[in-house]
Length: 590
Ligand code: F6R
Image (cartoon, rainbow, N blue to C red; front, top):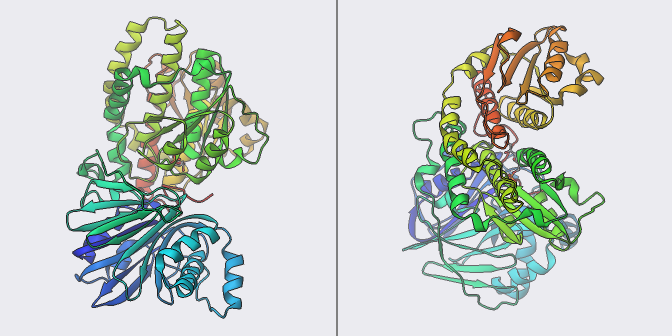
């Protein structure tokens, strides 16, 4: 995690550079800081908490060189001293990633008499760079030597006392260089600097760059100059603006009808790009968090429709368990950011054994580049930490993989009616978003300490996502449960007025899930039901009805009420909806 923005050029207001950094707050907001050239001297300001705290100490000064950082604390508490930038001797750096051998390096540097002021691995990186710079008297050679010694992941921006250039180096953490007519920006991702430029270069692992006001030189790890490709970022600036919405989460949920339309349209128009998954003996899906929850739905859709055995793994566990991945396996990584460290590590392992495919939202991200094949979701930039529209677009891509498989197997029955349902889907999504149930129900449940989301089959996977969304944005403790499993222990937690949210999207399992719901109602639970079935005879007060659609499309509709219920609950509880406490959007540490 952590976000980096830097600038070198003719002159830029510090406030403008910091406003770019604010676009990276989704990566962490424990503290922030800036180092900038001020009358030939490096001035450093660091503050605990959100970037707005730092802004109180920033004047309207202009600078020709600056590095800034927003932190998600890993080594050492979130306080001013541990905030980046870190300076040792002539070197000042900001860092995203983890130096895994920092303790060993710290011990050696301490033996040489270096005294550390912070608990961070980043200060160790700065001290190492400073030592190497003193030894070699050449910053490029020092960076090259650093790459050979430091283990772990890093995107580092460096400024050197007495030298007006900006240096960057990266391994396993993203870093891009943005090109302006009168200078350069560096950042952890392109949207951060989109208001300044959309032209950028992606730095590859072990590459490092010397950036002068008017010249950029990129080196590989043999110190050879490399040619670079300048790309143009497609999405518009409006994507990083809240517009009239109170929160990005609400804006992004409201974009879901368009996202669904765009993703389906793109893949129907580029049907050849969709790989034929029926060629594979089995499928393994690896992902984290909500993307893992999408994977569970994918498993259900693939197994039910294509009869291919599919296992879903938490990426953070994949490496540590027995792997049955073989040559005939297709390994699918799902990731919005394309930077999740655990998913990236898992796909690197899978690459050695099998065909890998990633379903990723961020173009050119590390997971996209690491996988043998990639299918991009068409969600646009997602800013709220809790994923909503990207989750939906991942579901759409998995659905397209199944549709392609069915086509290949010549088993796509009644294609015409499926296509017309797909065409009609955005309208149903819009209607669902515009329902007024969510706020009313949130008002009934927002004071609860615990909630339970239950369902069977594919509904259990939706329940899992519903529960995750609720706890991450509203801070209410919630659990998901396969409805039939509840009475094997968890039902002891149900008390008078505990919200139990039942999900029913299949007439065949309706009676069973309904029995489980009633079991909790008899024990005083406050029942809410989200269903595509007709349960009018059941007489429950809080029912959210969703349209019945083709089974392939039903999960897409099912999840939306839960995103809005979590949003409204969080709002009533006064939570920080777009940046929930302790969470970061791009989890680049394992
Ligand atoms: C939940 C959420 C997280 C992410 C997870 C994986 O709303 O956003 O659970 O889904 O951290 O992130 P990506 O998809 O970027 O790999």
